[in-house]
Image (tube, rainbow, N blue to C red; front, side):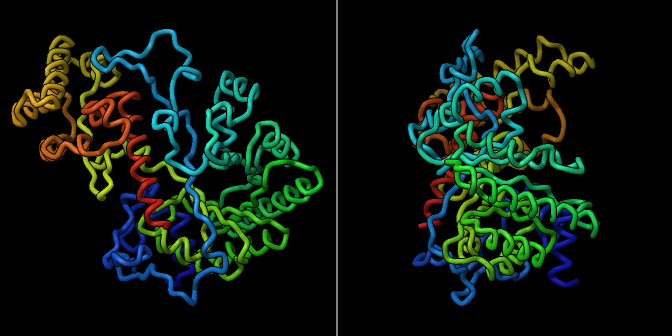
Length: 458
C-alpha cells in the first residue's frame, strides 16, 4: 500500500496502522524513543516498526525556530476550592461559574500558553452563554496569561451537510467575545467521508471557500482578533494543496484539522508534504495533537502550536493504569473507590448484588485506610486489603487492580511531586472518585505535561 493510500485509509477508518492504537491517541500511547540524546533535546525518535520520525536538517521547515505554544481546550474544567473531602461535600448553594477555580487559578500560574474555546462549549447551556456574552472570554475563565483561540467546534456538526454558521456571524462573535485568535469555519473530512471522493472534495471546497471569505471580510472589517485559516484534507497532497491556498490568501496563521485520531506515521507523512509550502513567517497550529515524543519532529516540520486535553482527561478516562503522571515519565493507576450514592452502587443494590449497608461499610473502611496510610498510621498490606475488599464487591474486570494499586501505594508518587495540588490534598489526588478529585488529578497531569513540553521545546 502506498504512503498516500495509507494516510487516506487511516484517517477514514481510525484503524490500527503500524502498531498504533485506534482512538484518540493520547500522548502516553505514543511510541517512546528508542534513541535519546542527553546533549540534544531533539533526539532521534523511532517508531516500533522502524519508521524514522527524525527530520534531518535538509528537510526542516522554513519557519522552524518560531516560538512553540500549547493550548488547553476549555470544557468547564473547574473544581471547588473548598471541597470537603472527608464528608465528600462541595460548598452548598455555590455558583460554580464564580466560586469554582480553573487550574491556572489553583496553581497561581498557567500550565499552558493559551486556551482554546469552541463555540459549541459556550452554547451548551443558556446560563453559560448568557454569562460569557455579558463579559469577554478572558474575564469568564479569568485568564490573562496568554491568548484565547476560538473555533466553531466542527465535530459538533460533522453529520450536517453544511456548517451551521455564516462567516459574518462568526467574525462578529469572535470580536464581541474578545478572542485573540479566531478560526475560520471548516468541515471535517474523517471516517467514511474521507473515503467518498465527491463528499471529501465538497467539504474541502467548503472549508477553502469559507477561509477565503473569512480572511477577506476580516481584512476589510477592522477586527482586532487575528484570523486563523483551517486546512482540511484526506491525504498528504490534499493537505498540502489546502495549506498552499491559505498562504496565497494572505494568512499568517493557519491550523490543520481532522488529524486528532490519525496514527503518528500518517501525521508525519502529511506534515512532510505540507512543509514544502510553509513560508518562514507562517504559524501553524495542529488541532488535537500534542504527542510529546513527536514534538521535535512536529516542530522541525513547521508546527508552532498544539492543543490537547489527553493528559487532563486520562485522569478519569484511562482504565489501563495511566491516571497519574510524573515528571520522570512514570504513570500510575488511580485507586477507585466509587461513592455509594453514585449510579454504579445504586444499580448494584437494585439488582440485589449487595446491601447498601455493606457497600457503605466497605467504602468507609477503604477511604479510612487510605488516609491512615497516607499519614503513616497503617501498613501497606492492611490498606490494600481494605481497598480490594470494596473493589471485589463492586466486581467487573478488576483482577489486575491489586498489582496496580500496590505499586501506586508503594511508591506514593503524590508525596514526591511538589505541585500545588499534590501538596494541598495529599492522597485524595490519587483516589478515583468524583469530579473534585478526578479533575484535580487531571490538573496535576496537565502541570506535568506542560513541564515536559517546555523542556522538549527549549
